[in-house]
Structures are given as structure tokens and as C-alpha cells.
Image (cartoon, rainbow, N blue to C red; front, side, top):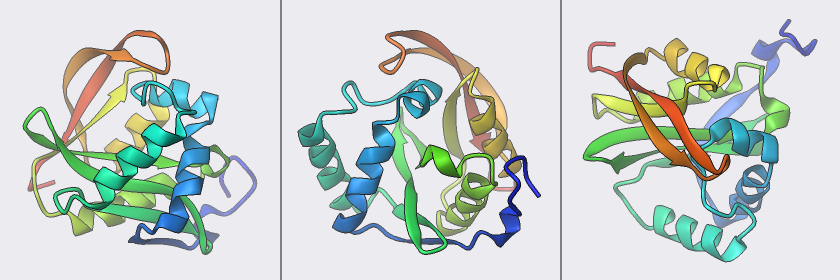
Length: 169
């Protein structure tokens, strides 16, 4: 049993291609102020639906961005994707807060990493985002560096870890 009184292994996790019907769930996830603060590096205005739709239109039409919807027990709960930033392949994920602490993000990310063969692959997490750092480390990422960047969700510069997954990990 996990800390929420539920056996995390009982959750059926599936990744599938994103459809337009998934976007309202992703938008609702993006509106969560607690999740935004934890993620730190978010869009400027999470409530701007036009900007959200424009961003996802670009993501869904760019073959260089592998993206999957995360389903838990047949319900869309988030997304995982990979993109190029600063000349390096990075990975990012987001699940609804009600699904945190159940190992779902770890399982979904591990499955996604099996679909994306390019290595090394990087991830970034605010230093105080212990849960995300733990998910990444469980999937084989190691801390490879540090950086600072402006975090829209916090309205200030935030220290972050740069994590890396090598080909032999």
C-alpha cells in the first residue's frame, strides 16, 4: 500500500497517442496552482486557453516531439513528451495532482523512455521539487548539473537540477 491507502500496483497505466479530446484534461491540470508552483517552469499564464491551444497545436503537428497521453484505469490523467531545448533532447511529464504519490508518473515515464531511443536525454526540475527529482532518479536519471531560471509559476528565479539519462543507463 502507498501513503494514500491504495495499492499503486493496482493502477492500470497506459500510454497512447494524444487526441484533441485529451486537451481539456491537460488544461485543467495546468490550472492547478499547487502543481504549477511545484513545476515552477510553466507557461506565463496557465489560464490563457488560446495560448494553451496554440502550444498544443504546435506540439501535435511536430513529428520531432514524441508525446503520449497517460491513462490510469482508462482515464486520461496527464501527458509525457520529449522535445529539443538548448540543443539537447529533454523529457517532461505532468499528471493531475490527485494521482500524485502512487508511482504513476514513474511508471509512465519509464514506459515512455522505452519508446524514445535518443540518448542522452535530459530533464530539469526545481531543486525543491523532490517528488519529480525522485521520479526521474527512479527512471535512471542522475544529477548532471545545476542552473537558474525564471519560473513563471513563482514569479522569481529558481535553482534547478539538470538530470541526465545516458545510453547505458
